[in-house]
Image (tube, rainbow, N blue to C red):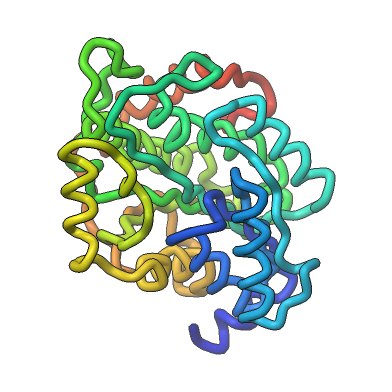
Length: 295
């Protein structure tokens, strides 16, 4: 990063979901190296503490600048507690990076009765973002970054079967969740126009992490086989760090990036009526209303 990006980090607070491993950890590390206060959202306390200690050691930051909040994105109650905990500790949030994600070979359901991939990858981030919109607006200029995937191009929002009850495939559920993230990005960018809060999404590339490696069957085999040909997590985090910090993107919103370049997303991702419908359905599923909803 250039000098201007380094200066950008002074006094900045950044939150990253899925911050203890893979792309999330290296995104946290990159922002901490620049001097930002980093809030890592992790599900596992011991893994979160280990990642936090590693980042503190590598950056020389004090523990007060590398924070850890435990939350399970498979629980909307946990996401609400996460937002409350953050706002009790901080008055400002300058960067929110919705990074955490899963891919599952077999269908599972969360405590909320929703398909796990849909809730963890998309709906919980929709909820978290809306709950934090007030502090993001108050902190403007601020940025929201949704970590999507090139897999969104093969996705389709099946409003008649969002939860995969009629015929579940892990890759189908994953692609749908990543398409939902892109639609959410574009719709939220429109709703936040003029507020000083920008919203962009990123395809990090095929990255070698533990993500999906424990999946069973053919999907897990293919993911493990692809490992040697994938990017390192550090390289995979590069565009997220760039979107969070580059002064060149101060006014850029509603775009899709890979390798630091704006690229075209799928045709369906630009369907404005579908984005609006998904927003309304998501409000209902997340039980959101009133001031938390971006108008």
